[in-house]
Image (tube, rainbow, N blue to C red):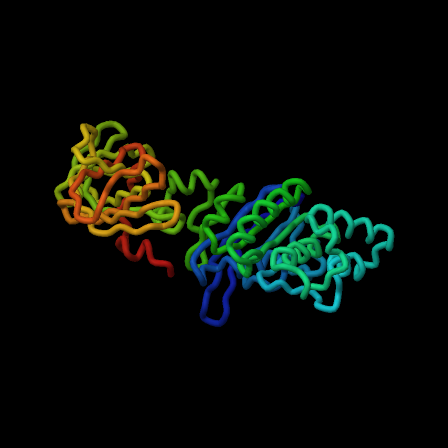
Length: 369
């Protein structure tokens, strides 16, 4: 049940700076996920914590003990890789028991630890199977069991479900969270799957270009992200460039290419005539045949429609030229809308986000590198 404290660690590979003075605190028993685009540094970060690579500078503490230069085998951390690296000549119970075996555990203790892992991971009946006889999910469960059987309280998961198909991945991620919580572990989980991170994490770390962009709970990062990049990367969002024309308390009136919009900007620090960015999630926009009496109702034309299984995505062009993506989850009450229809899109003030205009421009702010 350790806590982890990362203090200004950097990692360079020649001229490439994979990590840039990254600092992060992970609480005891926390399930923390790290996500970001390819090359953002998330794998270098977890490998630094695990002792697979050594940071170029900075320090890592586990329960206030400096482990920056501690060998991998002495860190008492279980590491699970994306590649399911089981010993092919060992059965399930032998793979799980490998850690206690090399540590010289008493055979009785070892047998009990292996049995507990098999029960916890629902591998009963597969103890004598070789890896070649297991499903992808059972293989990864065995790898997780092997990481935990020696008593590690810190679990490091490096894309652990990335090699599995969607249905197995979805089922196993919930089993993994339950296991971590039941055992009172601290877990650090690197993933490229945003939905996976949001569904199992206590907190999420968003990374870009070797740095931490933002840290928060899944709900906070999705509904009220503090950074434009987070709004873009975690889910989907519409972005509009505008200029502040009026300020009334916490309400900002913004001109977006001739269309006026009212935004509740509780945390915004903007002045009249400041350029700004407005963002809104596609599922928060409402479509109506008639103009709404509410503020923020734009006349639009539907130009695209795509079916996504559980939802329909409409692409609209507003009179001011703005492009909007609108998401409707399928229900029996879904609107009858077709390409070519003219209607009104309402952007509720309560779901609009307002940001200071980025110094380097919106495109640079949203770039993945």
